[in-house]
Length: 147
Image (cartoon, rainbow, N blue to C red; front, top):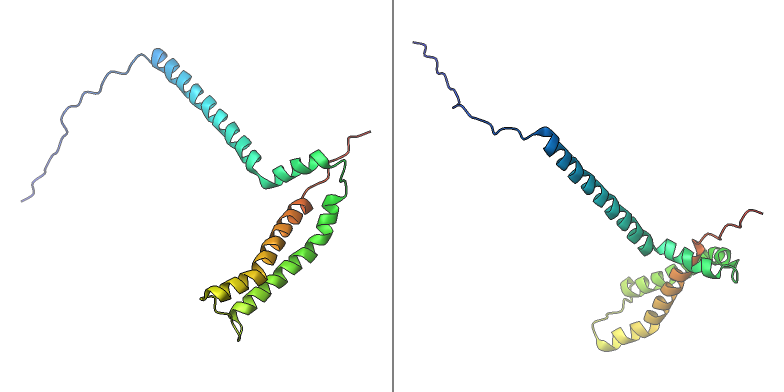
């Protein structure tokens, strides 16, 4: 015996479509406003990113003083490898001191104070110098205006 089942949906009535000329102009105007707002947001985000960019900040800082210190970026670029090497040598010394055969245990207050006295200040100061020299080494000298 073969029986067929027929399923039909109830008759649905869709709402009437509003007059296209009125709805179309309102939605077009709304879309234009949204696009304009997005453009403003993108411009704001780009300006914010440029203001917080370290390289741009250092470039602007150097540009203010470039007349007085024209060779400074080149000098920083030439000494940067020496400062980096000294920094890594100090880091290696610290790592060796903490992991070598005669490793220092920093659990006691005295051992920690002695370790910080020996390495803390030098490491912090050398890291600070490395950061400053590194930033200035990446600065581009301002281009001379065409004569």
